[in-house]
Length: 126
Length: 370
Image (cartoon, rainbow over all chains, first blue to last red; front, side, top):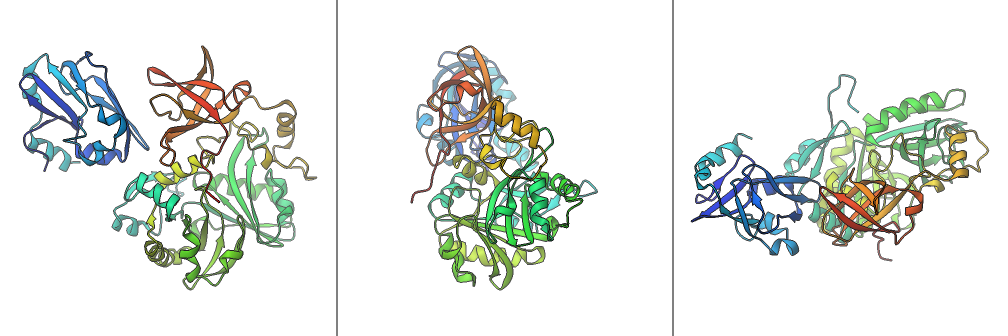
């Protein structure tokens, strides 16, 4: 069961909403599928992200995978600890492994994201 | 390669891999474990202690007869008759144009008996070509690829783990040597070869005994703090050790000199051999490009196919790349123009939208201590 207070996408990202700010990362399922994560390429602060567009890249030992913005907004910060400790995405994907924080430009998009139960169903369906 | 019906092939150890929690993928037509506990964990286990590998997918081709050595000298670029009995060398099979059909290990088991080990994806091609190239020689090919199990135990503790299970004195078995004996009571060929850059052994048995062999070796591996290792870590281990992978560094459009493996081609042998005249020309004129090691000095990981530039000039492309678990930096191999191949040369690798600086270095990236 994934954390109940977060929202999710079918691309296996999670979102924590706090007022007009959203914190974004990838789910435990996504991290497990990628394997040992060794590099996270994140957007510059200030960049405007469009919903569903790629905003970064996560690399495991074997694979490269794009990150897709769950929501539209401007990047206000990125997780500086991932430069030295990208493995946090594997060990604590919903905590220390967070990736970017954005200021929402269209808060109404949140209603279109999956809730925890719907995301669990998606993963269970493979 | 798949079987005649185009079906994926299965290791005799598949149910064991599944029980160990492995993730299975299709590789060269076989369903094989890519990882168990995780690539980094498995990689470090092999560097520091030991790991156990299922290599049942590899091709085993036996060549017997009074002219077995001469036939192989005509079929391959190396000089198998020069091998002492019980020794092995790295070799290649080339096409008439000098392109690499496969890279191989050739073991001399007896005066008139050799074992050629081919990559899974090329085993059928090598088998067919060997059968054709043996024509006219007093030598017989016995393709036992689907009748042979192969398990490798690799890492600094591999000798300690394996010795109690075998009658062969492993300390006397030299690097690139092979001996016939028993492992866990199973008739076996034990070779001191591998694809990890560590000391280690490869054990060949009849396919029907593979599971029994694996069970005994896994117990011994666990007793020495080792783990089963999948194809993912096998790839990062071989890359650190600077060893080429067919399909990445080597293919039909690449000759041994380009791959910086000209030493494997024995032009001095008297035999005519497939690819000889094309390879003599490359040896004389120099290769059109060179395989080099690269250490990425910026942020990013170079992957297969990424372009390599020197200034504004495209010089080549990456063939393999990863984050080196041992060195902690991104490493890669790739082809560049001969003039850009000197160690110390600074190049730019195109990583998605960015240009990331990298430096040409001598291979291997990692050499085991001692």
